[in-house]
Figure 1: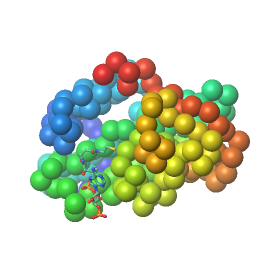
Figure 2 (figure 1 turned 90 degrees about the horizontal axis):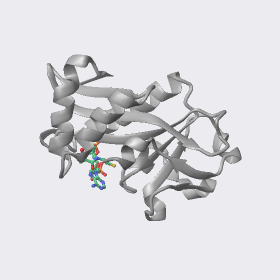
Figure 3 (figure 1 turned 90 degrees about the vertical axis):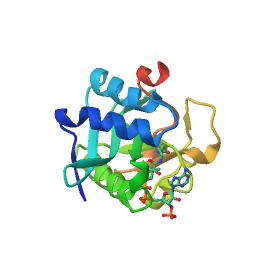
Figure 4 (figure 1 turned 120 degrees about the vertical axis):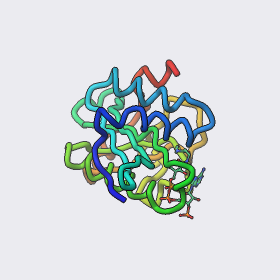
Length: 167
Ligand SMILES: CC(C)(COP(=O)(O)OP(=O)(O)OC[C@H]1O[C@@H](n2cnc3c(N)ncnc32)[C@H](O)[C@@H]1OP(=O)(O)O)[C@@H](O)C(=O)NCCC(=O)NCCS
């Protein structure tokens, strides 16, 4: 198992992984839209030999008044259903967060399973006075500081790129 940056030749396989892991093709289309329209997207794949078995994407988000800090959202991520529950998702999250750190990203947000992301250090973003732009339960919108204390001085609503709203 290996985690590496997505290459152009991976694009159709990444689409298939997302389409197979989620109930609809919305997330697979979102991945293409983010890659095509948003600068600074981070896209990593998990490979098993020549096969792509998982994918994770991060893209810039904003909070009004926090332009000095580089903030990203983790979304979406997917592991081929045949390969789930073997730790591949965890490898993708950890490698993705390392890549975010190396790009001086200060904090990452995720809207997702509240039993899954806390194991990587994510906490409900409400602890920092930060909310999702979507009307979701408190515990599913989470934040992780990559730069200690950065969220002490930031509060408000996390806004995702508009392509999220178009899908
Ligand atoms: C979520 C996902 C990426 C995890 O990938 P994975 O390779 O199976 O993850 P890991 O093997 O590292 O971890 C498995 C853990 O994830 C948990 N998990 C998977 N789906 C979950 C869900 N819907 N809710 C809560 N936990 C979930 C499993 O219960 C397991 O927990 P355990 O370690 O306590 O037993 C994968 O299940 C997937 O692609 N799901 C469909 C798409 C999706 O929901 N993406 C995430 C959007 S937030």
